[in-house]
Length: 272
Image 1 (cartoon, rainbow, N blue to C red):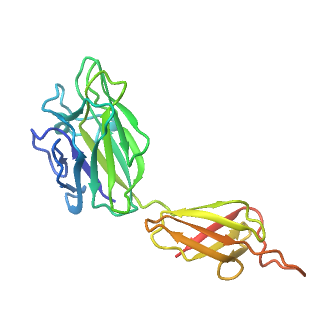
Image 2 (cartoon, rainbow, N blue to C red):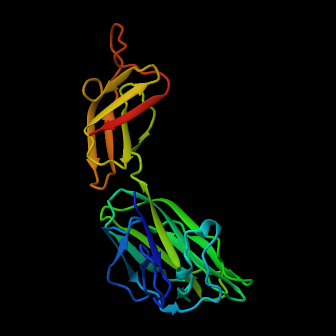
Image 3 (tube, rainbow, N blue to C red):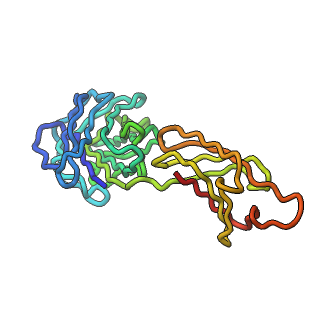
């Protein structure tokens, strides 16, 4: 999986490859190179661009600790926000839909008061980063959003703004996306698996539309929609997610039958 690095340093320096230079007014897509400096068709652009871009940072130097991936050139400037209500937004496009990325955001500036930036990814819960604590610029802390999934259009949305608690304008300097692969398919079933019961469930992270269901207990006994399970109905949303319903086999009305009985913990498997 690929790694992509974005600098918001103001465009007043030369950034080494594969860093991309995103300026505050970049609303047209620019290329993101992967860690091998290869163009793999991934781009970034602002969809809601910030108003401010600073040109210098007093103590431009490489990041340390969690921010050790940040180069000094990315600390020579930054994009600023004085709006604690509206989010500025950049979109990374051209990713493989369903692929997962760990997104890490960094901000720094040298103020004599506390400046805090809010970040969020894919409209999720925000995280706050103190870019200056009044004693100097942040050089070691980041905020991390793990397992962010590219949507059906192959996009990941990254947003930021000044935090309510910030004493003034807050900044972003650098962002990286590190490929984490495609998330594992998952299934959730609602209700106890009782004989004859109608059951519903949902699924996510599938690369195709499932067509069959198998239930297996801890003793390797199994029943499936090819034989015992009936009325399997699957609704696919077209983005790797969907829902399904089915009917468990009823108990036999006479005699003995083990063919439809499961015991203990049950594993559900949808197959395509």
